[in-house]
Image (cartoon, rainbow, N blue to C red):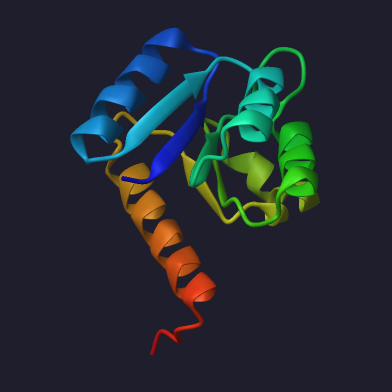
Length: 128
């Protein structure tokens, strides 16, 4: 069961994501800020990170660079309400960028695709 680290400062959204992702068969660890995310990654490596950008303290883009420095192999999906961050150069480090919506279908699909790409890449298989 893949482990997803959800970094979201809104507790209701974090709870919603946890429920939906657990229903999809994932183990979910939820944290409320970037500092908690970095500590969690150091202690308990997730298979993928879903990272909000607009958070108090260290924003998600700064956290993204630090996550990348800690472990370039952990895929990160930026998940934000603001599409304009996608054009910021640092966001290109992320494996995917998903704009928040009331439906989580796109996020779940992106998680599945990202994990599958990483699985193929780590196994040396080529996807035709």
